[in-house]
Image (cartoon, rainbow over all chains, first blue to last red; front, side, top):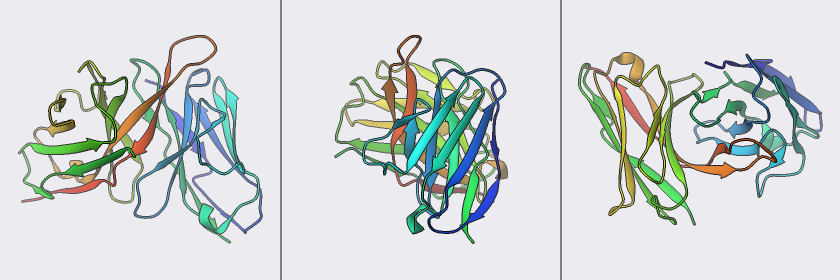
Length: 108
Length: 126
């Protein structure tokens, strides 16, 4: 099965900072990669699908990139409402779908 | 507006079967969308449990396959999750979600959980 590894597991940042989260797949997955945001006590919400496509209604400061094994979620200017935990996820056909372990973005 | 709402007993005894329902509104589960279940143990990350497609075909996480059954009732527009022989390790928030489908320029379709229910907490304890 494909394993998804995120880094860092947590980070501290200030409002206005540029934040980058990395997700690495244990083998090539093309662009079958999604990113989710989960705020405390809430269900996750999709931000990015297909590695770089912005979900409808999601602010343009969220950007996804990458293909193959290495992917990045970038928040170009961190806003107060962006403090949350972020997960990458692989989902393709009959393979075992897998989430990364999460990256918690905290206020510095 | 698409909505999903999970329900079920909040407490299940060890070795028994956990049974949850997800009521779907705003679209038909027999249309082109899949639906899935995901869980999250307290303070932990997300774990995919499995999916059911619009034809009723299922796809499970191998780590849970021997104990899990996902089914649907198209007349009620809801799906169900059953997890047998539960232990304390199955204590978690359980979410149902709609699975959106996207097509790459080449290759098979991709999938994304694009609408989530609010989740229901299940504790396994005697």
